[in-house]
Image (cartoon, rainbow, N blue to C red; front, side, top):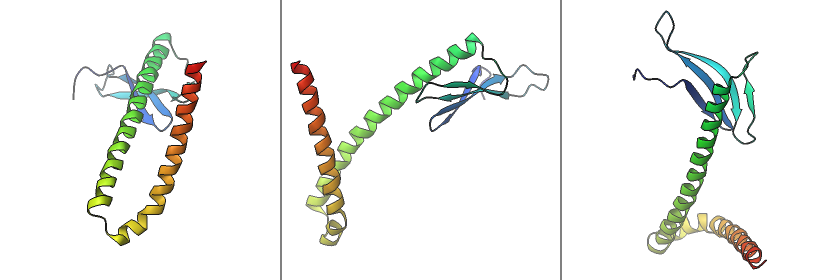
Length: 135
């Protein structure tokens, strides 16, 4: 393990993270992690753990992590969507070249409904953007 450990550790959870202060300067020379806060990335809440008061350095580190985490999640969203486009293309190729009638019977209605729903939302959002551009 590296000797240059970060000052803070963020244990990621679905809506944010538990924030720990990393301590290696103790008499046992062990890594100790003291929970200092809970962060909710969706609404920006930072709740100190227990009776702890967060320092400016703590808050700056937490805010930096939240900003970086939001960027990471946004990039993952776009990547997931682009992967979905790839999956749709693979699905079209499978349907055209390898799908058997029984397989198509299992998936056709679900695919058609999902694609219809997606198309409706995309068309509506595109129309909204075009209308805003005209204003």
